[in-house]
Every structure is written in C-alpha cells, then in structure tokens.
Amino acid sequence: MALNDITLGQYYPADSVVHRLDPRVKIVLLIVLIVAIFVAGNLLAYAPVIAFLALVTYLSKVPVKMMVKGIKPLRFILILTFVLNLFFLQGETPLLNLGFAVITKEALITAVHYSLRLVLLVMISSLLTLTTPPIVLTDGLERLLSPLRVIHFPAHEMAMMMSIALRFIPTLLEEADKIMKAQTARGADFESGNLIARAKAMVPLLVPLFVSAFRRAGDLAMAMEARCYHGGEGRTRLRVLKCERRDYIACAAVAALLALVILCGKVY
Amino acid sequence: MQVTLEHVTHTYQPGSPFQATAIRNVNLTIRSGEFLALIGHTGCGKSTLAQHINGLLKPTEGRVLLDGQDIHQKGFNKKEVRQKVGLVFQYPEHQLFEETVAKDVGFGPKNLGLPEGEIAQRVQEALDKVGLSLPGLAEKSPFELSGGQMRRVAMAGVLAMRPEILVLDEPAAGLDPQSREDMLQLISSLHRQGTTVVMISHSMDDVARFASRAVVMEHGTVVMEGAPEEIFRHPEELERMGLDVPSVCKLGMRLRAMGIECPQDIFREEQAELALLSLWKGGAGHGAE
Ligand SMILES: Nc1ncnc2c1ncn2[C@@H]1O[C@H](COP(=O)(O)OP(=O)(O)O)[C@@H](O)[C@H]1O
Ligand SMILES: [Mg+2]
Image (cartoon, rainbow over the protein chains, first blue to last red):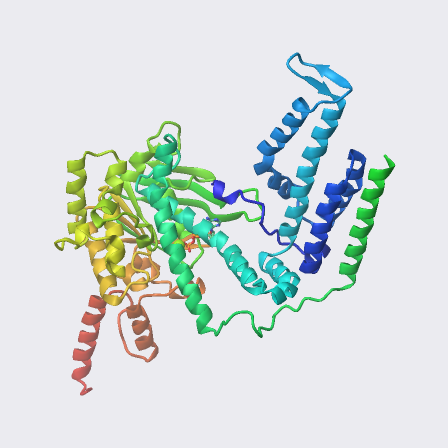
C-alpha cells in the first residue's frame, strides 16, 4: 500500500559513526552543508559535495536504494525544474535549434545545476532523518533552540509537540490502514471513481481516524499528567548530549568542505 | 460454500528493511457450517490469515480459493467475496463513522448497490439479530452508545451484507463480562442458524464451549488442527507455545495431581459439573463432606 512508501523522515536503524554523532552537531552541519550547496557557484564546486555525500552515505551503512527512494516523490518538480530552465533560459552559445525553442549551453548548464542542487538538498536532508531517530532529533533541536528562551520562545513545548507528532505518525498510518481495510471489508471502494467519488469515499476513513486521534490525544494527556508532566521547567534528561572526538572531526570535515566549495567556485 | 487456502505465504513490505513474513505455507479449508477457532500467541499471524479469507490481503505465494475459484485471478468479482465472507475486525467499533446507527449499518448493503427499500429491511434485520431493536436507537449517533453496543452496531454492519462465512477477530476482547457473554451467545446463535464461523480467540474456555474445530498457529504456521478435545489433550505442547487450556482442564489436572480420580476428557463446564457430581456422590458414600 502507498502508505508504506514514505521515506522522507523515516529512520533507518544501523550501527554507524554517522548514527552516533551528536544530533545537535548533525543539525548544525546540515545547515552548513545546505549553505555550501547554495554558494556552490558552478558545477565543479558540486564535486566535493557529491564526494562528501557519497562518503557519509557509505559510513552510515544506509543502502543507496533508501536514499534514492527519498527523491522519488520529487521527480515531477525535478523534471519541471530541468525542462523549464532548459527551454526558457536565454544564453549565448546555441547547441540545438528545435524550431520552437533554442537550447543554449548556458541553459543546459543552469538546468543541470538547479536539478543537481535540488537532488543534493533532499539527499543530504534525508541522510539526517535516516540516521537519527526522530526523538533524538527533536531533543537536539530543543537544545539548540533553548537559548531563545530568553526571548520567550517555547523551545521545550515545540520540541515536545514535534516528538509527539513524530511518534504518532506511524501509529496513525497503521490505524488508517486498519480502518481502510475494515471499510473495504464492507464493500467500500477507495480506488476507483472520479475525483468527487474518491473524496466522498474518504469520509468513512477520516471520521474514524479523527475520532481515534482525539481519543489517543486525550489518553496521552492524561497519562502524561498522571506521571507529573508539567512542562520543561526543571526537567532533567535521560540522554545527556555530549560532544565527542568524532563530532569535532565531523565539524572539521564540513568546514574544510565549505572552504573547498568556495574555492572551486572562485577558481573556475 | 467453501474457502480453501493453498500454500499461502504472506510477507509484509517485501524488499524493504522492515519486511516480515507473517504466515508461511498455510493450508486450510473452511468447511461449510463449521465453527472454526483460530488460536495462537500474539503476533503468530492470526489476523493476517483472517484477512486472506475475504481477499483483503493477497498472498505473496499460494492461492485462496472460493468454491474452487482463485479469488485473485483476473476478472474475479472482489465484491462477491466481500459479501460472502464477512470480516469483523478486532475492535470493530473503531470503524463507525456515520451520523446514525441505521446509516452505518447500511453502509455495506449500499456499497453492494442494493435499492433503498432492501437496505432499510436489511438494516432492521441486522439490528434485530444483534439485539439492538430498541425504539429510536437506529436514529441515534453511534458515538453516543456504550462500548458493547457500539461493537454490536459494527457487527450488524457486517451482518447486513448477509455473509455466508463470518470471520471474527477477537470479538470478545475488551468487553465487560455481560457484553462478552452476549457477544458469544450472538455468535453461537448465528452459527446455529447456518452461518459458518471462524473465530480468533485467546479464551480456551470459549473455544471448548463453541468450536467444532480448532487450528493452532505458531510463528506463522499451522502446528495443530483438530476437534477441541484433541487439541486440549496436549496441555504441555500448548503451554510451551504460551497458550492455555480451558480452566476446567486445569481443575481436572489439579484433582488428578492430588490423587483424586477424575476422567481425562473434560473440557466444558457441563462435563465438569457431571463429573464433579458423580465424584461427590461416590465420595459421599465414604462419609466425606
Ligand atoms: N501491516 C503490517 N505491516 C508489517 N507487519 C505487520 C503488519 N501487520 C502485522 N504485521 C506483523 O505480522 C506478524 C503477524 O501479525 P498478526 O497477523 O497481526 O498476528 P496476530 O493477529 O496473531 O497477533 C506480526 O509479527 C506483526 O508484527
Ligand atoms: Mg491479531
């Protein structure tokens, strides 16, 4: 069923250096890498990024198949980006005259450049979610954002909401799958008919799903209160985050990569 | 009507890191008119097996036959399978969605494309069967009812399709003793009226009381099959699988361990009653209390 095909935001359990990195470090490094991808001024500058991505993927033990699966939902945007740039960008050196449009060398380079940028962004981001359990990720995010508390930013509440939401995504998908099956057993049809018929067919799925989500939310709130949850004030943690040697090495590697990317952009 | 599973294997999410084979090479025939109990430890694949009987899940390997016809072959009418084999999921009350009880029960017949008059008639009949013919109840919201009533509405929703085979996934789970007994009596009376019943259950007492045949599963395969009497003759085997024997069996075993003579083949309360009565009468002659 299509419900199982969602890779983005899915964790791939494995024992690797990448998995063991401090989540705060991983989040910051992801931001730096995204910056690196955006400052890469030409195609040559992508070479070190691609090499780095390949190395990290190898170290993480995440199968390449899983990484590629993350791009699949974006294929239409990718094609659109590529085609639009290719046909509508004006350049100076014509390569091919199709009659209705002229493809130029500059347009081709830009099309490749933008599509590559998109692919790299998605791959690098999914590498973070594939190697970091959602709970650890939100924990890291909370710690990174906690200095903002001085301006009354609700870092703890945000992180708690996120981790609860993430925790319940698989549960809700499972629930949706079950309800869908139960209604199919009563002859419901989710797959055929026109748009309106299909939208109507969702009612027997959505009503029970909302009812169960609200029931779960109520139960969870109760259970949290019963265990004396009262917000982030004075809460200690089970996992105390601490930077280790591998985290410093990772930081150094990414810094070097950023320098290399900038250099490549300048030299060419 | 007869459903046969031939060498059925089912793997969830094949090819992904989360791939899991839930049932392996299962061969099973559901005979017309029988009351089949499906027992086994949690996670052994009972629900997966149940969902193959009405074609909700497609076997990764093997075939499911309805009167000799492969239900997954091209051109086979799936709606016919869904109508003939009614599947009541675990906690079926979680599938209710309509504004009124009547509309919810009528969902199945409506999907079958029946005319309004026929739907109304079937809804009434199904509600009568599950004992919910109280005046005004049909126009209530199903969400206003009690847990036991909600489950009976969900059950009526399946019965309204007039299935010939009724598959029930732990129908008594999570009910209070009274609702539980009502539910079991309802299932038993449907069986007596000619419906073939397949019931997944964790209660060996219920299996001993109602089933004409039992199938025991472990790790996705069928490991024992036969009349409940035969199955419960292997208490050690069942215990090893994390299962139980009827409480009456346990009583018999304890009495024998204490050196009190009592017959072996006792699985049901009535049988125990007779045995205890004759023990007591026999013992009374020796001056026991
Ligand atoms: N939708 C699903 N996706 C993946 N695995 C599943 C799914 N449903 C069940 N399983 C797995 O299949 C096995 C059998 O499950 P199930 O048929 O529900 O067993 P039972 O009903 O006997 O408790 C379990 O190990 C379970 O984790
Ligand atoms: Mg089950």
